[in-house]
Length: 191
Ligand code: ADP
Image 1 (cartoon, rainbow, N blue to C red):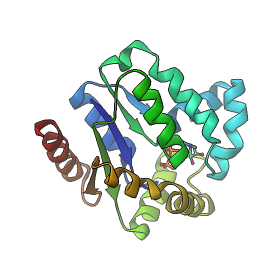
Image 2 (tube, rainbow, N blue to C red; image 1 turned 90 degrees about the vertical axis):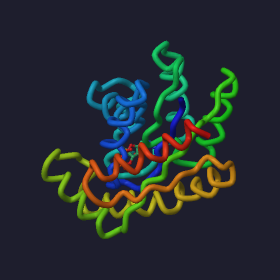
Image 3 (spheres, rainbow, N blue to C red; image 1 turned 180 degrees about the vertical axis):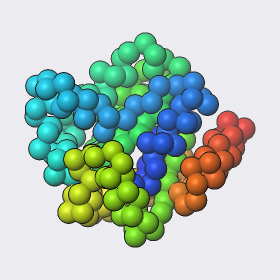
């Protein structure tokens, strides 16, 4: 099963994506994690994306698409995977569709997690204290929200038009949100 998680920064995509991956027994492909890992390891890729990560700007499409393509060639992705933080632009969405089609696959379900902007900001500021993520500063948080609204939110209409989208309320405890998600994915499997 191939699932895409869509949603603004702070909505809890990472937490919910990890849980759903365990349930579906598919690998978790978080482009944010992959890029942060490359930066931490100081690889050429990591050095080339550091500035984008720190400023809360999107890494260029061709860079992210190539990272994802290489990951998709790993054998553990044969039974499916869950994308978290990718695609983030229409160009990335088209590239993903082409990559999957080349292997005879397609996206089964897109889950959009939603939450009011003041709650997103509050969650990210809490996370900043807990995890010390370099891009969880007030200025960068605001930029990431703007980038989401301008460049990623149009994907919602794109996937709705393709009849793949389910929208899930991201409010409440992680358990409450996960129960809503599993209900959606169950519907997907049934029909
Ligand atoms: P969040 O959803 O909280 O913003 P992520 O961990 O998904 O966090 O992403 C962190 C950063 O990594 C982004 O601000 C961006 O710089 C970069 N990034 C991650 N995924 C992509 C992508 N698909 N396209 C471009 N940049 C990306």
